[in-house]
Length: 278
Image (cartoon, rainbow, N blue to C red):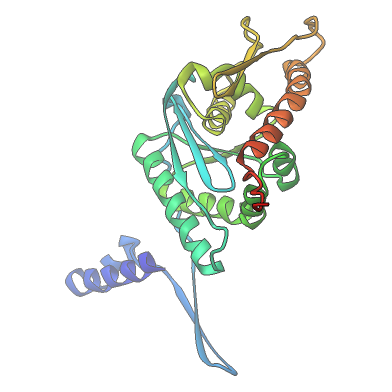
């Protein structure tokens, strides 16, 4: 809307200097319709104009930037054109306990920083095709506090912010299937690059857009954190099977181990009972 108003101001100045005919050929003016409506609270003014698309400044040939959405932050990982890891960072985003307007403002600020970085780098953004039920299943076993933050987090709002700001900044925003992104990131990239499991998942999303293959590594060991590593077995490879079938087998073996680790972690965090003196 501000761009349309500025364009009309430039048109008026151009017409004053060079005349009506030259101004019409300049292509500066942009039509704006105004509608006045009165309700119980007073008068409202609605403005409508055509949306001007910004020129696309990103190219997947330069690489991609993946963003993994979590309850208290956005995990971001960047790759080069060949899918190699470049850098990762964490954008804090705790909306639990905030009002609706506060949450919207926090989401907008976090998304704006990531989109601006993508615009400067000239690389498209990659998000997961959001499914709240699947995300809850992935985070099953987390602490109750984490689950509460998860329920208060607006995935739809984050997606809308990425798409709208990307359109305005000329940044392409893609959505890919997030199947097994967390387990692939944990097995292949977490320990290799010193990433968190969420940053490793974001790296997997970025690589998936670039068409990188994610085969099972020869060293079949999974880091669980705190120096703990677990070995896993993979069924015989068959050409008729998709590689995700093999990753599904790996995930099936890891789920009980991860759930047990979460339960153990909660027990360690529980306060010890204090006995009253006899």
